[in-house]
Amino acid sequence: MRTKSLKKNKINVVTLGCSKNVYDSEVLMGQLQASGKEVVHEEEGNIVVINTCGFINNAKEESVNTILEFVQKKEEGAVDKVFVTGCLSERYKPDLEKEIPNVDEYFGTTELPGLLKALGADYKHELIGERLTTTPKNYAYLKIAEGCDRPCSFCAIPLMRGKHKSTPIEEVVLEAEKLAAKGVKELILIAQDLTYYGLDLYKKRNLAELLEALVKVEGIEWIRLHYAFPTGFPMDVLEVMNREPKICNYIDIPLQHISDSILKSMRRGTTKEKTTQLLQDFRKAVPNMTIRTTLIVGYPGETEADFQILKNWVQEMRFERLGCFTYSHEENTHAYNLEDDVPEEIKRERANEIMEIQSQISWELNQEKIGQEFKVVIDRKEGNYFIGRTEFDSPDVDNEVLIDATETYLKTGEYTTVRITDAADFDLYGDVVIKG
Image (cartoon, rainbow, N blue to C red; front, side, top):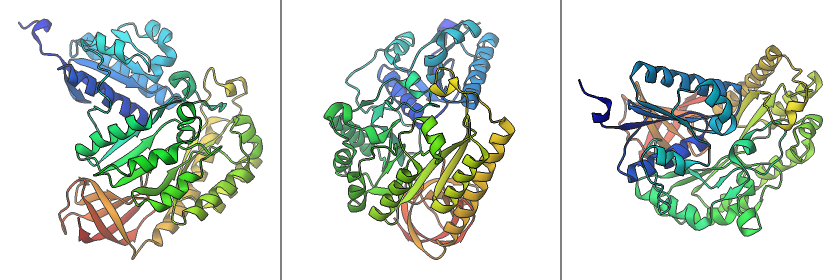
């Protein structure tokens, strides 16, 4: 009988949570491969690394269940070792070690060298930008900063990710060049807060200068902005967006709420009047901009009147893209001192109401697109359709363009011109006009 020591080790990295975790897993995999390790992403492997999320209750539950699943496999002999890293591990390491002791070792978000050592690999400082991307080959996430300095009352990210730390422009550009050399055509810039980029390094908000450098990278066709904070937004970014065709007329700017009393309790540093003016300035500066936002309902003290203010505002602003979450009461946050006084059922009802309004808005905006032509990138094929996106849509969260695969052949990563022939709430249907 073969003993475990003779088995060739294959490391399976399992990623949970947001795009920042996807990026971190890719960096880990790149480091492992550079040390000669066999590494896969969410496939069979006898050594498992789970990159966890600890942001809100649902995410924490999914992370714990995944850990328990692989611990069970370890007990059954299906895997040899289980390691846990990421935000949940950073936030709850002592509790996890006590409750789930059969994990070989827990690591926090800043302990990559230690995790690599446990996996028999060396941390290589020279590997700037060397990662094993797990997204479709045409796009990749590009993290330009880590951590967050904002004091938002509901958010545990600073507990898990630390203070804001910008990556120098030259390092971001080098990574972008390496991604482009691999065939990546779309960069999705991510950070806990893009708005703050550069303040720590350059003593000024420097996102515009970073964009000016990235548009010069050959092979990159689209650059997309994710997770900007509304307070202190550097308006020179909009001028660059308007001028540079590579920068998608798109921004993801989580606003969370609009009632002044809730914004104050959330410690967002803004008001309904200022936020509305900011969005009007966005649309004036970049007339065909798509704005994506996320909202939280059921925050402590949110009255029916607060919710009506939010509902009316969503109808008035007509966001192109919008997501809505129910409030999650998180330990060690400022809001945890408040009474979580909105019942779960009411939270869900309010979230559903917001999304019903948004669904109607999205349907109406999509109807206006019928007959228009758009540049579309093809992400994948599903059944009888090629699935693509316009510059106004981010992967996984936004509208998709469906093209009949029985009528035409397209390649993943190919850009093509599509005429929209029909539209639903969150899907567009179209025919290819020009290939390539």
